[in-house]
Length: 391
Image (cartoon, rainbow, N blue to C red):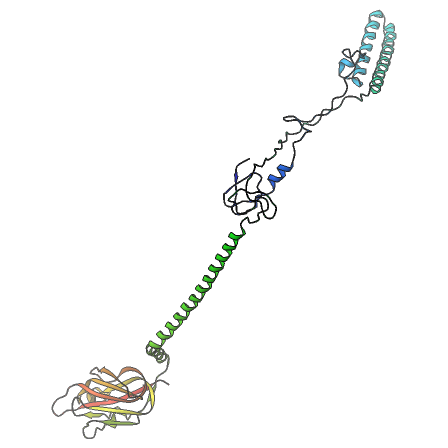
């Protein structure tokens, strides 16, 4: 038995096995074909078949007559030519020797040579026909060409199954060695109970796979819940970012307050002069700490506050009175919430802007936190306050 292994799992298998006993892999039917084929009796080991030999050619060894052409290569045309040539040569030699004296005698002798050659040829042809007739009468048809040589063929061998002592296959009855899981002839499982246990184990793993699928779904749900909670917690910041983006893309529009009140003011410079739209009129605050408040009829998205400090937009009128250098801005929203900002002002005429970006604004209060040029007999001049909203 030739030792070989399964190409699938590498387990050793027998020379006559058709299926692997470990994994049930198909091994091919070559071993069975070699077992069914018998030894060849037609071809001898180590040799080739040749053409049958014919009967021997008649000759001196066989007791038969040999014609004049046998030594020239065969009993056919070669022998006839040889006999004719020999007869012509002998006759020609005799004629030349007898007529050397005259030209006329030589011509006659040449004619005699030709006649002698024809006679010799006739004798050889008769002898050849007689030999062929004798060969056909004895059953020999002539020489046979040698057969074409053939390549040696491998000798078939017969696989001998070793005696196997084991459980028979429930399907085909073939005996199998102990320890095999599949029949070596038809690959039928030899232990159905083990297959059933394996199937049950696969079902259990499949159920576990379903449970893991539910776990994955639960994990995805938890991630969604976490995102919702994060969005709820960071909603104010996200909303502020969105509103800021809208503020940057919008075109600010001016808005006028509906009422202006002040905690204190000097004569002829009321609080209303800070929002009348004229740069040569101003609200006069007697001291640092005084405040003025602007109210709006409807809530609005306040983008910025623009302050014009000083008594006039001209340089000479600007320095005539003291100027606020710092303001405290308190913005009140509709729900009562407040936003405190600080605005630092340069000591120069012209508008100076402070960005707010606050929604639902209903009131804005400005408090003088510091002033420049405040001396005895002078007051703080706040020329104009402008407000811009988002449309």
